[in-house]
Image (tube, rainbow, N blue to C red; front, side, top):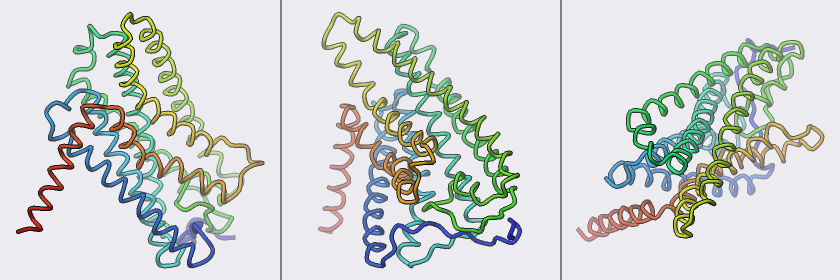
Length: 316
């Protein structure tokens, strides 16, 4: 039986069996990838260049856009290249690198979403202390902690997973290197080490989820006690985009990792993986720009500036 020392590459799950469908999927995911690059790139440049968007929430949104770009760029380009060139292979080192960066970005993104819930809680429930609790220095420290926690999580799981001996071949039932699918290839008595690490991470994820849920319970209680209907509408409008992003991220991720084995299948796993690893990166800019008037106005100005620059360049 082969072990990890004899596995030089893995075979990823293709999007489709026929060449025509592979090219169709390539075009579809290319469109999604370009939309994610454009949307998150516009948010990055807009927040960085617009002086009215230098609030703590906008700072966390900038970090979220960076992480979304990193997450989708870790998985989708390789899958698109495989679909375009009709291949399934990814090298052992490439698979380990993909696992590391995907876990890094996804864990850091979840931490940033937790910080954004804290920011909304302080802004609405402790508004008089907002400047002292969520100042620029505190934001930088919290963001550094989020990125650092993602890095440590990635190191822990990548090192543990790729130290396991592989006894079940090299075919990964996913379009990118995903830890649960790699664990299926490990020897039955060896994967318990990674299960322990996963249990530790799941407890942290659950803790963050409870914190987000409790924060929003306090937020909704405070908003409903506001005497002004306009104040309630403004408070809800600042919270709903973040709540929508968290719901999309958590629901798809939980279904991917906690669904019963009885309903698991390669096609369902593929769809769910796309929902939690690809769709949020493309949808997050749209969700935030729809409800944030300042960001929407700044994006329009930025997009208008880019369009006029392109027209002027074409005329010259």
